[in-house]
Length: 249
Ligand code: SF4
Image 1: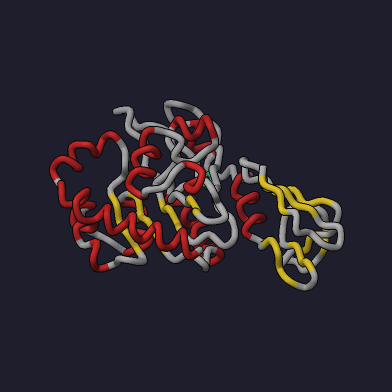
Image 2 (image 1 turned 135 degrees about the vertical axis):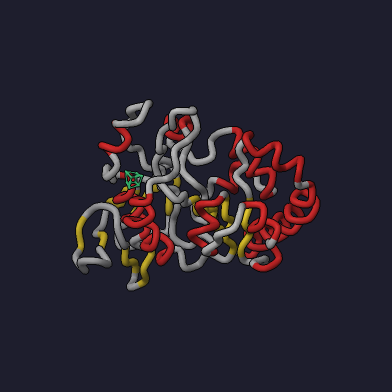
């Protein structure tokens, strides 16, 4: 639970780990409608936007059920559980693929072995990694897609990108470093059409503002062994840039 003590005119706001924003003791104005109402949205404090509509967008995404029928038809027959982990002003974007089964259960992104490896790659402790005011975690689909017949994760449903992604990216205008995790994020953010290896190997074409990475899944341990240049060259440059942006931000 995070508190903003700087409220004026009777405002107070709390952002819970779940991403739910609660504003009380004042009126919250919607940028979309321009009307005031209690609840999540845009708070105007002394004429200055204080909490942006991003909180509202994350809340709307967390309520999305567009894929309910699709997920019900998978082997896991699960329900949508969007994990929307971002907030206004984030300087680092982690653009992932989609939550796995463990993240689906916990509601916390990268709350698994892949996350441990990714945090090691970034040089970030969990506290900084999960500070959504500094690090936005936006996968290509916000829900666990389920498994295919071989037990592998299904691809992120395209409808999620089509419905939400452009709006989220437009509001994350203060991002200075994009970390693209896996082929789906490479395609969306870079228009990459080659293999993951080709895209990652061309990292100097996009650094220091963008780093394309393989997925940190255990399934890619063999890839890491075959491509030692990734840990020797890419990761030191990535860590230096993450540290710089986090420090500046
Ligand atoms: S994957 Fe995206 S579009 Fe589908 S239910 Fe989840 S949030 Fe909605």
